[in-house]
Amino acid sequence: MPLVTSEEMLLKAQKGGYAVGAFNAENMEMVKAIIQAAEELKAPVMIQTTPSTIKYGTLDTYCAIVAAEAAQASVPVCLHLDHGSSFDLAMKALKAGYTSVMIDGSKLDFEGNVEVSKKVADVAASMGIPCEAELGKVGGKEDDLEAVADTNTDPQQAKEFVERTGVTSLAVAIGTAHGFYVGTPVLDKERLSEIREVVDIPLVLHGASGLTDEDVMDCVRRGICKVNFATELRAAYSKAVRETLEDEKVFDPKVYGKAGIAAVKELVMARMKVCGCDGKAE
Image 1 (cartoon, rainbow, N blue to C red):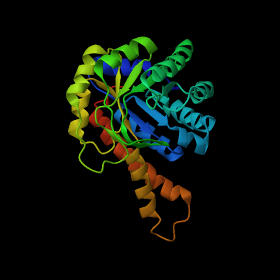
Image 2 (cartoon, helix red, strand yellow):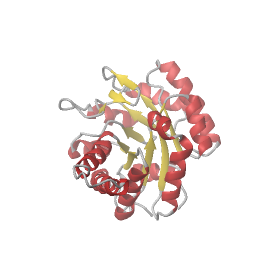
Image 3 (cartoon, rainbow, N blue to C red):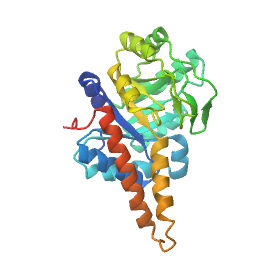
């Protein structure tokens, strides 16, 4: 089917008490793997690209790949700009055909974040496209952005932020980090519950690669409606390719590409089950 926006799938997740899996893709093989997993489990799915991925392949390239693969699928597929780094990039993504965008103004002060998030949300809304924003700072490294320390989201500030910007989903900081964890993450789940009490739009969890299944499921129970997975997909793909290339007779990219697809598909299916979105596609 044609690409869909994230709005309906996230609102259904919010009402149904599960989360939509949102998976970052770097190439055609990863896109195929993610959609194949969604098809097999009958799950709605979001495919995401970050600014550095876009620099590598361009907005138009990724939009064309995802749209072509989605057209052959029976489940809803959304193409999302992850960690949009500027108003300009968000506008280019909308023009290219992305069906959901994120503007990440978390590196700015509160008023600066409000300003840029509202600006993007207003334009996106005029086009019928949902807009995600982030409040608080998720630790670790995502793309070219690196946070030295976590600054968890304040519930009352989150309420004000949503009311002033008009964003349709909100990524919150509760102690997660981008990339793989060095130690054991300590999540402020009570803070998540407090945010849920005062914010009525779908909440998003970033930095889920490396969290335990139990932590992810508990966050979903507390109101998370979208869970992002990126680093572990890259690792699974690279590991499968590396192992395939140990055979020096292999020279056809399709051989190790298929190995990468299989590895990513298996991981995505496992994560979809943890999010509870399997069987939720109509």
